Every structure is written in structure tokens, then in C-alpha cells.
Amino acid sequence: MIVYNEPFLKENETLVCWGDSLTSDRNSYVGFLAERLRSKNITVINAGRKGDKTPLALMRLESVLFKKEFDALSIFLGVNDAIIGRGRWADEPFIAPETYRDNLIWMISHIRTFLGDKKISIVIPYSPFEADAYDEFGDCIRPYAQMARDVAAKMRCRIVPLDIRYEEFRSKKGPKSQQILTVDGVHPTAELGEFTAEVMLESWKME
Image 1 (spheres, rainbow, N blue to C red):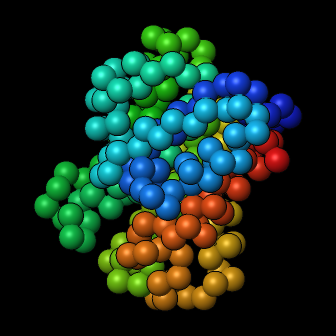
Image 2: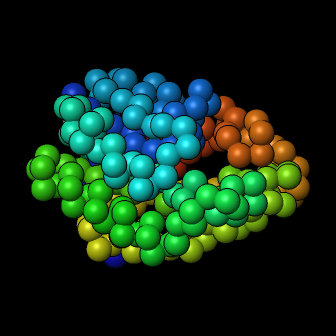
Image 3: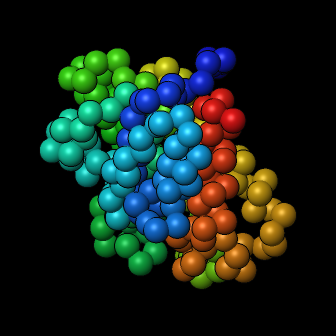
């Protein structure tokens, strides 16, 4: 495992947060990151899109990400990859963990090929499901989390172990049959958004 001793971000840099609705939603971690990093004059851009999965995120790289000026990128994808083809989305194409892994590798490779050696961090996807959503999807994200770890090591990206930290945090709140840290069984409350930002900043040595 690579150990980074330097902060992920420097003063006056720009960070892009690339992800799905866990990034784009009102209560997401992005607003908390922006607030905490404002004192260092670090600009935070929310490039999350509701429903995004790695195949779609890979397809929109050129039209969205390649048109932005930035110094660092945080990738937080995997929850939608894991649930597609299951439960209420059983009719949609299944994205295997190996496909998720390969898509992340392609994403990072394209960025480095066309945009240079940008600083990249991977947030390991956690299982946000509570109440009925937990009954429906359970812990299906675990193999995707492992793939994200493998990619971070292979591609030399900074890692944010959100899955581990979240499980520790969630275990103190009560059973997952109770809706506590989400507004609908999936999407975060402000408390969870702030917790996510704290884990990211801590992992990036920005605290």
C-alpha cells in the first residue's frame, strides 16, 4: 500500500468531485468540502450526476470533465453499478464488479493520457441502504468496494476508505432496518454528508 504523507490538495487549487447522486444531491459531502476548504482558497466543483454508473461516467468524460480546468479529481462511483440488475432495477443490464473495475481504470487512464498527471483520489463505495432499501439490496456493494481498492493501488490513486469508516459510524446508530442516516433509505442526510466530507479530508491529510 502506498502511504502519502503530503496533503492531497494545496492552496488555490481546484477539485472536481465526480460521481452519482451521492455527490450531486443537496445533502452530499460536496458542500461540506467546499465550506471546509474555503479558507485555503480551494475551489470545489460538483460534477456529480444522478443515476450515474461507471459506463455512463466514462462516456461523459470528454463532454464534461475534459472541459473543466482542475488540479485534482475525486471519483466516488459504484453504488449504482452494484444495484443495477437487482431488485427494482432487475430488468437493466448487470454491471459485474470486474466491469466496474475496468471502467475505473479506463477513466483514470483517459484522464492521465489527455489531461496530464492529475491528482486522483478514489472514494471506496459504501453501502448506504437502510430500511426497505437494505432489505432490497443488502450488502451487494462489498465486491465493488474491493475492486475500487484494487484500482487505487494499481493506478496509484489516493484512497478514501469510506466503506470501513461508514460501517463503524453506522454501527453506533442502530440496525439498518431503521432509517437514520438517509432521507429515503439511500440518499444521505446532512449528518452523513458531513461525515463523508470529514473522512475524505482526514484521508487526504487536510485536517
